[in-house]
Image 1 (cartoon, rainbow, N blue to C red):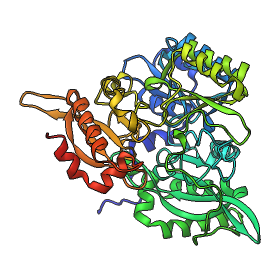
Image 2 (tube, rainbow, N blue to C red):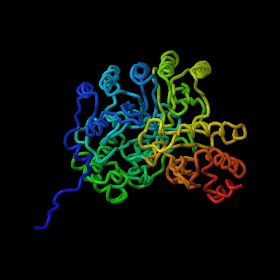
Image 3 (cartoon, rainbow, N blue to C red):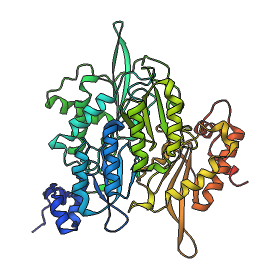
Image 4 (cartoon, rainbow, N blue to C red):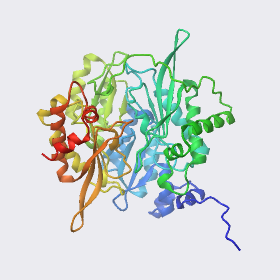
Length: 526
């Protein structure tokens, strides 16, 4: 008799999820160990395995990157009590603890909850932390303040029981203007504020981009709608999540992201399915547009966040602290919270370049706050520029990494700080990722490194694929594969050539696209 296959093929992870995603961490603490299945499900609670046996990572979800100063002090206390006094800021504005023992995981969650923070959906096949432009509230270029929409969407999607089991992670961002500071084209959903004129009045809404992503196979997001009314943006994001839930690959996790659904179906089919889902849920699509229109508002510079100590529309200053490698001590984080209490608006903002911002500073207090931040141990200039290098945690903590990204960070710091590069200080950004997962998105910046192993006659050594000339909508071009210790020299040659051949106010990416990759390939051989 012929064998019958009347069911969908599903991965082992899907079988684990089907058995249930509820865990009792107090019971796990009593046992002192997690099973393989529990480790998989623990991701829904923001708990992930670490490279160091017996240790775990917890990821605190920070919608829009905003925490209150009291929440920040509490997070610092949790780091002090349970995570060797250290915490990390991620490239999606979350906060991570490392070195957690399994017996303390439940206590970490309880302590965080005292100030209204949580690790729920920090990892897992769910909607992850909803990111937003760090200057969302007061940026002079914004079409509207997108922070309330980001936070509302985050809660709406996180609280939805029918979105608890997606094929894989689902990432959403909100940008306040076409500057795209929240990286809309490299996420599952990028919501970008736009404004149009209707009968002499300004109407703000969102352009929606879906299907972007990094990882081993990168895709640039595609425009789903040119305009969605702001009051229904959370409902549209839910419909996109439903599309992903119903059509994502549940057998091959390597192809289980929304980007593959959009690639497989095409944007027109995805739009059709999403409109059907909205109709099923009783959501009006009146005002949803696909035609182009003039986006009105202030002209947007190429890289809006390079402005030092930006003054917002409220007349207040945002002062920044550059956090090397995204890691700081509980004392430093607590000190930043205290500065926000004294001089700011009792809020701290984490950024996708792993830094911390203090908004709401009176201009008269700016210099004093800058001085205090420097005393804490942080630089207060050079953001979104050549010195603002972003590495993932690499093999320091991550079990998937194949390279020591932080060591390369330190090697490059000695190069980019040279005085000969002062003229291009704000024209180059550098990202370093430890594996193809691209947690530090190396394809979308001027210089990107991706960790790899390079074969030698006897074994292999740590190396990096090096891309240059990257942008969200036009990914970097490969310069070559290089041993880690050669990367600083190669980087210096690239920067020297850039200084030599650039014109006007070009960024490195502008120059690479103008003169071509061959020009730089020849320069590094000299």
